Length: 173
Image 1: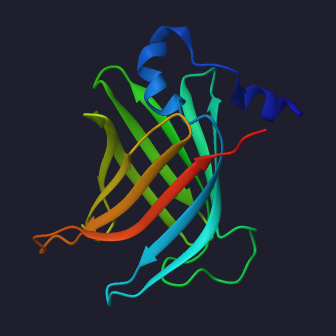
Image 2: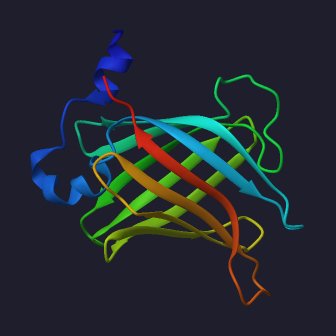
């Protein structure tokens, strides 16, 4: 492993905020996913993908990589496009919440959100460059599975629109 990779990765959460870091830390590992994208016209398309979570920055943050569809470089995923992006999730003790940044340079999609637990779930909220509200939620979380939903609400809309739903299962072995 080169110095950059060695210095970026961490083997465990930093002890200073270990309990809070477990909110996303429980996802550390490799996941297979089934992704369904929903178009505004009611069409949907499902494809396989993969997600990888790890500790980074002395264990003070969780970073992930989402690859949809699998294998990377496959034909374009209808409706949502192909994803090869990463999220950096950093716990901010001053606000007792997570600062979240998503980067998908291939699709030129960049999002900033704030994440917090909501009951048994995790909800991340933010705003796009055009003023649409975004809500990304982790629900139905167990030790080996979770459901993730990506929703959007235009500034003039009353209701949220489901854009993407992911069902993930932890890889074994």
